[in-house]
Structure formats: C-alpha cells, structure tokens
Amino acid sequence: MIAGVLFLALLCGAAVVFLCLMLQSNIAYNHLRHLGTGPRMRGEKVLSPQKPLPGAASTTVHVQSPGVVVELDRRNGSKPKHFTGRDKTTLFSNSSKSSFVSDPSKPVICHTFSPGRLGNHLFEYASILGLAHKLNKTFFFENDEDIQKVLKYPPVQNDRTELKARCHKAKRLEERYLCRYDGNLLTQDLAGDYSIGTYLQSWVYFDEIRQEMKKAVTFADGIVQNATKVIDGLRKKYPNTIFVGVHNRRGDMTNKGFASQGYVTATPDFFKRALTYFRSIFSRVKFIVLGDDEQWNKDNLHPVNDDVIVLKPSSSSAVDIQILSLTDHMIRTVGTFGWWAAFKIPGTPTVVYLKDFVRKKSSLSKWYSENAEDYMLPGWIGL
Image (tube, rainbow, N blue to C red):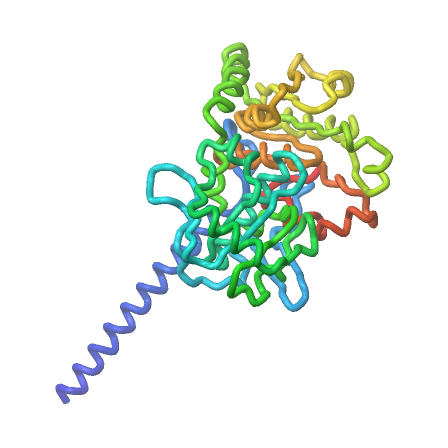
C-alpha cells in the first residue's frame, strides 16, 4: 500500500516537472516569434510589424540545390535545416577585437579574391568565413590587400607560408551560382583542404555568424572619421530628422553590354515610389543620395520641401559606403556597394530595394534564386 502511494507521488511529481518544462519552452518559443515578426521603424512607430509591407516577399525561403532543400524562416533568421548543430571552435580571437584568426591545425578553405571591387570582396570575405564556420575549418585568403586596407580588424592569418603551400595543393571547388546560395558547397566530401570560388554573393553562407560579421566589417578609423564628418555636419544642420540613405548605381550598368545581360537601372518612377514610402512614415526626413551619376540624381530625384540632398562621391568607395551606413534607413538599387551599406547600418533599419533589378529570363537572371531571396536580406522590402 505504502509503495503504491509513493509510486503515485513520484509519478505526479514527474508530471508537474514535465508540464513546467513544456510551459517554459512555449514561453521561449513565443518570445522568439515575437522578436522575429518583422522590421521595426527606427525613430517612429507607425506601421505595425505584423502588417505585411508593400512589396514584401513571402516569409519562407526555399533555397534549392540538387538533393538539398534549405528552408529558412525570413521572420527569425532560422538556420538552414540541413546544417548540423555540432559545436564549432570560434573563428574569433579571445581579445576584445573582432578579428577572425586562422588556425593552421584545421583543414583549410582557401580563396582568391575576384577582380571585382570592394562590395564584391566583402561578400567573398564574409561567405568564406561563414563556410569555414559551418564546416569547422580555418581560412586562407591569397590576396587580401583590399580587405586588410579598409577593415579596422582585418583577418589574422597565422603561418601564411604553410597555409599558402597547402592551398596550392588543395582541390578546387567552384560555386554554381554567382549570386545565390549553392548548397553543394556544404554537401561535398570536404574532409581535407579546399579552394572555393568565386563571388559567393548570398547571405545564407554567413547567416550563422551574421552578427559577428557586422563587427568584423567595421571600417578603419580614418575611413569612419571622414564619413562621420559628413553625416555629423548634416545632422547638426537638420536636427531631429530621420536620414534615409539612397544609393543609385548607374555608370557601367547603362552600357549596352551589361544591359544585354539583363542588368536594369532604377527609373525616376522607382525613386518616386521609394521616397513617397518613407515620406508617408516620417514627418521629418532627409534623403542622403550617393551614386556614380551625380547629375542624374539631381535631375531625377525631385525633392519635396527640399528633402533630397545629393552628395558628390568621394575618391574612396569605403568612405561612401560608410556615409550611407551612418544613416537611419536605406534605399538601394543594384550592386553590392549598396548591399553592404545597408547591411552595416546598426540596429534594424528599414531597407527598400529595386525589386526588378534583373530582367526576367535574361542570362543574368540565372545567377539569382526566385525573387533573389537568398541575396536580399530577410525583411528588406522590394518595390
């Protein structure tokens, strides 16, 4: 009899503990859902984050490659479901700095930067580090002068001579898509050293270390100081004002060769809609415009109450990226320059982009997934 009572008491106790754990798990789950309901406007809460925003894509991304379907929740930045959750040694040093540090005791992922410019190189840098993290490897960059020059905390490559020799013998693996996630890079037998190319322009590669990358792409002090002087001067002149950065790339994109591949430049109508979108949200707003065609911007971005400020590009792409990253929100058209300016804005900015920046069924469109969902960050708004 006593044994039966004790058994029932233990059973009831276990049930109570189980219910408490379930309740705690549910609370945590709901909290995570709340955190990922959508972008909040900085400076003024007008739109409900639950309300779909104009032009917003589906909240679920299905990134496909042969034999692999990666499902991501755009609302909470979930990890691709086929990634393992095994423990990985951090790529960061233990100091207060945010440098990535190579570890020659591990298998290495090697990379040679493309002939492209800074925006392309930042994508390559971030994606190689993201792949190294996912695969528990170290990294080696053959020609990292551009990155070393602009970053405050550039990568620390220990034993360069040894790693360089290993990289020259490493098996080479090319991405299949220049501007979308290629799951094949993670499903290969990557037990040894590998050299991976080329442009790797997808946030999915480095999503697991996205917050670390925000710190790691901090620009050098001189670059930040030059950009800060510009923005501080504008904020002093226009206090209590929301600043929206605008990047408009035209230049080479207007050439017949690029146009025939499928590149599309933004029209005055796009800017009218994008500027109207922010004007409808913020009562005091200034648009800080940078691009490679200053006169076109002056002629076609028509201000309302003198709210458009067109800046002359500096001689440094890093300074111009930094200027835009010091604004509160962002409008971008095409190119990796504007992508990284938007990425570097602190907090949760609202980012509006040219949705049809690639002509459908063109040769260029094959580089991107549907709606460019693994190129554009979750929460960015296509118009």
